[in-house]
Image (tube, helix red, strand yellow):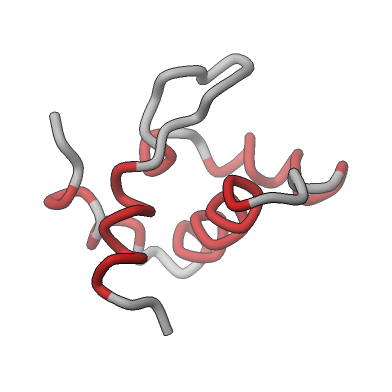
Length: 71
């Protein structure tokens, strides 16, 4: 289970590279995360956040992060 701080950090996390560079992870399409799942997520905090975001998207629960995102 994520702490409040972890949830907030996930909501504010941005993709630092690639096609969706600069976008919040919650705004990155599920298909992009599925590609990383097949190829291997980065072995760092970003990779953990990407894997978690994929799971939230699979469960249809990513909408809970949208109110937390700085826009």
